[in-house]
Image (cartoon, rainbow, N blue to C red):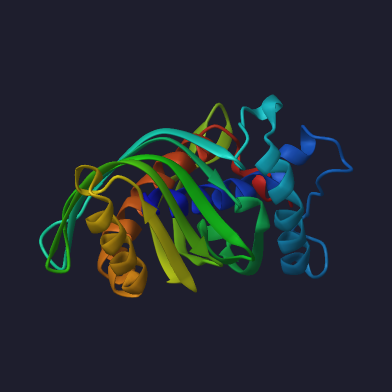
Length: 256
């Protein structure tokens, strides 16, 4: 559940980075700007282009097949964590994610000729996910089981796309990129609020106690889940990125 929130954030940011140049040719000029690599202060121009692209992409760009990202509607997500203090099977369906439109790009590094990039993003508000969940396993030493409505809120998360590395290939005389490596870090979450309704087959006393426990120990819980979350993020962002980079010529992303 948590991983999906962050995955969508990072996935949207990968789209921002890539489409900041390419969709400017397909969207009204007043909405987006394109930065040529030859302009002075290209880095600043590129970051401004990405920031300008964020609200456009959040609303969706039907002409290039981008559906709205905020709110984002999900049908299903399964996440599992192995043995350890947090050992759960968590399933989410029919959910909405709200708040990604508040994303702000804070840093970017690139080696365009060698197909390597990195970036940092702040979300200057809460990211909230609401929907239906089911869970089974244990948190610390306590068993947890239930299904019902959920609300999980990440307070001002910071994300790092630490490395996005690709390899070029030529198709129909044009150069494209296939992603070979994606490395993501969840740099910081100020706080996480959790509400899982109907835990323990509707036992309100146990459910309330567990929700209190989850919120009191949110930092330990998210720390234990972090490796699985980051691994899931990397796999999904790589898949999404390859759908994009293998379809749009590389030069449209970064014109000379």
